[in-house]
Image (cartoon, rainbow, N blue to C red):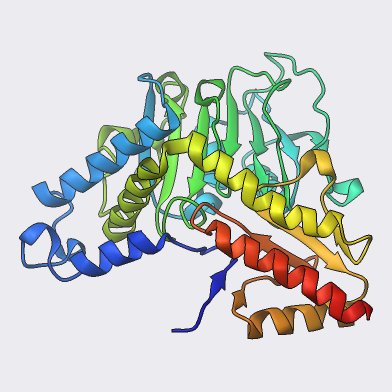
Length: 361
């Protein structure tokens, strides 16, 4: 097998150890003679997987006891609709902070349920940085929604200081489990798994128990958080294989040393590539302002489109996969999620430096 470096933005790289473990157990889980995919979601074997995944996540993220963890389907896109469906009322107005395309999609969905306030937006500056958030009145908004990391533009909230609201909601699909976060600052956190947590198919939702008490009644059962809380995410058949792989990823993360170790490693990986950009004297140009750079998605362009196409062509020939930027903005993007090893980022830096030398001669 040739050497491949997977920088896809999602579905993204999974740890090799996890894939090997899943391969080993694929046909015979826990010595039962059948795959985990064939076990009943209400049987003891899957039940153990489900609970262990929840407990591992609680431990790794230091989730307080007054929070619930749910495993749902539909991705972050379904959460864009479920949140307003559960928490918007005619006499209240939620506030959204726009930092990229996914924030825009969240606002678009919420607007179908009532009036939505755009608190501040970085769109005028082409989403190159996280905007400075104005002081928020505690009772002006029913909830405040942010997107912690922006995969398309390569920006990330460096911290959550300065944004205070009793019901703060965050879409953390592309940077959950990559760094330490103050979970107790948020009323609800949601994340599609296919970047840092596991494969596509399962969405993690973490929220304070008192938040569920605010939810609207009379909405379809499958779209009600209350339904999923009462049924422990087992109201209908969950994506059992995705949750099984999520458990394996969480075990792998714990074995590495948890969030502190992952954060340190992610900072080191991203810095390798950002250094190649910053030291190129303009050969490579980063999209994100330095104070808003993402550790997960490193976005950049070359001097012209022809050179960018050549860069991507040569990169793929050498085993670098997934480096093309999102179709909406073009350029290049290296997604260095948790499972991307340090050596992949070292190899990409080396390729970038050599590509520059070759094309400046």
